[in-house]
Amino acid sequence: MARAAVLPPSRLSPTLPLLPLLLLLLQETGAQDVRVRVLPEVRGRLGGTVELPCHLLPPTTERVSQVTWQRLDGTVVAAFHPSFGVDFPNSQFSKDRLSFVRARPETNADLRDATLAFRGLRVEDEGNYTCEFATFPNGTRRGVTWLRVIAQPENHAEAQEVTIGPQSVAVARCVSTGGRPPARITWISSLGGEAKDTQEPGIQAGTVTIISRYSLVPVGRADGVKVTCRVEHESFEEPILLPVTLSVRYPPEVSISGYDDNWYLGRSEAILTCDVRSNPEPTDYDWSTTSGVFPASAVAQGSQLLVHSVDRMVNTTFICTATNAVGTGRAEQVILVRDTPQASRDVGPLVWGAVGGTLLVLLLAGGFLALILLRGRRRRKSPGGGGNDGDRGSYDPKTQVFGNGGPVFWRSASPEPMRPDGREEDEEEEEEMKAEQGLMLPPHESPKDDMESHLDGSLISRRAVYV
Image (cartoon, rainbow, N blue to C red; front, side, top):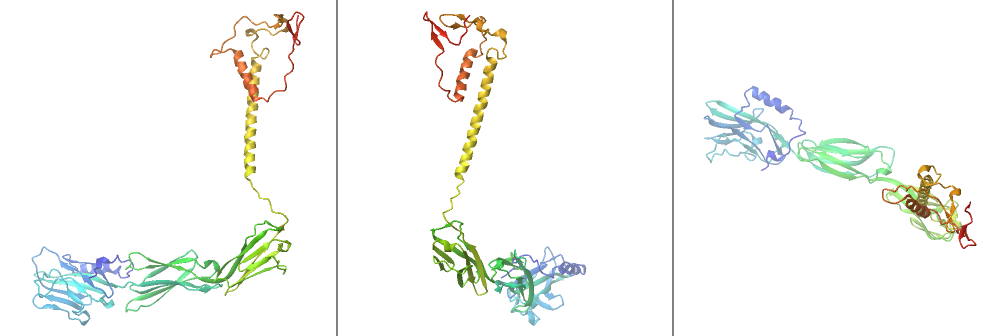
């Protein structure tokens, strides 16, 4: 048995705004009793079964003498009396379709439960129903329920094939059949068309069929595009989405591919391809040239043109013409034949050469800078290079004296300062000289030794000045 609680909450009913006003009016007139528990609204499917709950709430010492269901216009639908049993006085609401769920003559029924069941629900069953308890000694207690009859629609969507043209036409249709209340249809699309809805009676009485047509100006780019029909109805837990692929007939849109700007004399098996977009598919391809002379080495094979061997005759403009049931489209391709193959432009070596050159320049610059710094440091430490003359010995040539066959330089008797690491300045200069020689290019061949033998067997320098 279908229950009202199975259905999702109502969203589209135009009668719902009237319910609060109606119930308020009944309460003010004493028709709605807080002691009677009923549902404000019950929904049932057309042709299905539904129950209208009605309970007299305890605790109470009242005696229930009769239970009655009637419509808002006063028509009695059903009655139950402990002594006289069940009565359905209206032929529209016969005992074949209506029954009390708990109150039955053959049982010791509790008249505080007057739930009424409908079978084979009809459109005309929709309306307000009042459940009344005749009690003693407090009189009548009642509650009102709004019974709504709904019908779930059947839905489908389809494309309508059209031909390209300047006028807006329907390209898709979405139909929601037999809904109660009527379904709501919208379209989801990126093409910017517009929708127009029409309404007609459904197959069953009281139902409505909605037909929505989606229209736009048919163009080639709309062919194959998907649009979506969205159907909403209160009987659905969520909207129904129906995708539709549009079909627009249009003549071929042609382009030619395969030419790489490197067709040279003697090249073999060069191919041009006629790329076509159309609806329907092309039925014929034709290859020609603007000059009217077709190269003997070129062979047309449907949408492709095969050139077995490129020669001077291929240096022309080729035309591909495609035809379908709607019309014809064409494209041109200029071919420039070269004498020799075009060299490949590999930028890899150029890039690596530039990187290597940059690194070399940086290394040379670093070495040159280090050389300048080392020379400046040596110059500051050499005699006459700006140092303190009082701390170092004289380098006057007149101070040179003869020694054991060679010049002897006078040196100050005061010890030179030591470095913190225990090395003398001469050792440091020697290391700097080695470092400097490592950064410089190899020197030219050194000159001969400037020392010569004297008569007494000693060695005398050619460049030294003796006094």
